[in-house]
Length: 361
Image 1 (cartoon, helix red, strand yellow):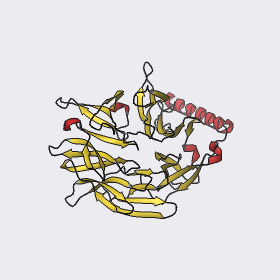
Image 2: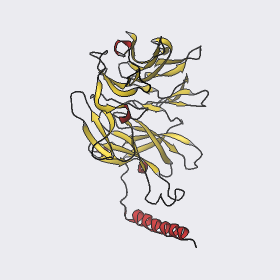
Image 3: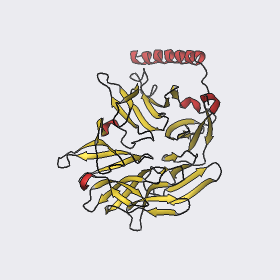
Image 4: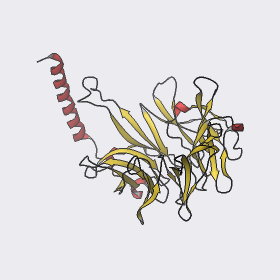
């Protein structure tokens, strides 16, 4: 027998023994959530504080916007183009569709008034990325010269550019109920490779675009910026001299609040209680010997200010399926994600609702 094959067999036997011992002596986890499988299969979903879930599903050529709640079931709200729809507590939805000319257009949907296109800043395209409970929408739009600019929209004032003096390229990614927004702007546009920096806008002075001190675009997930109603911005940053990834909370005129450190962490969302949804990529100890036998894996976590780290994978019963990802969390701690069904043929959305007495409520 070849030495390498013998080594693999020995390593496999040791790993099986260790796994058996860990299973035998590990404490049973406490079930913290009621789990409901939703009648939709959408990766891009959002949830409001009323438990309404909005998502994009269907074929890639003709995706549709779906709205679900426990009382009314599923409702098809029509075609949508880009993903990442958002929903507020009034049941209003912001997203992006296509107009009659095939151009991307930000839209606002109201339960009573239906859908309206938000227009552009002079160009042909726009995209809505988030909204707050007052119906303010943020995103980006092309200007007449083709530059992508961050915008804010509301019914009273329409679409307004957040670019200082119209000279900054960027996008607004999230907005809270105070009208504070977080996004990114490009600096050094005349350079061959302009740099991007995190940007914070305050409703009291919307044309002032201070760069968030100590945070760059690289400190954030590329598709997620988030700010809660307490003014905290969720960020990912390296804390020298340690090289591990830390996630932290930033607030204007306050120091960074360090939360925890993980290797290969991706931040997903957080709420007003500063509960953080994140994933963590793990390399198995024996992966170097065989990536086929010992592949790396991703675990899904909730970081709670009082309870610490909670592994969400273990909250899904095996009879329901295997957690495939978490996507959003509301201010009651309800989480929407995705599972792979036991038959491994279907991927479905799942709702995790906290059991109050097990959270000390």
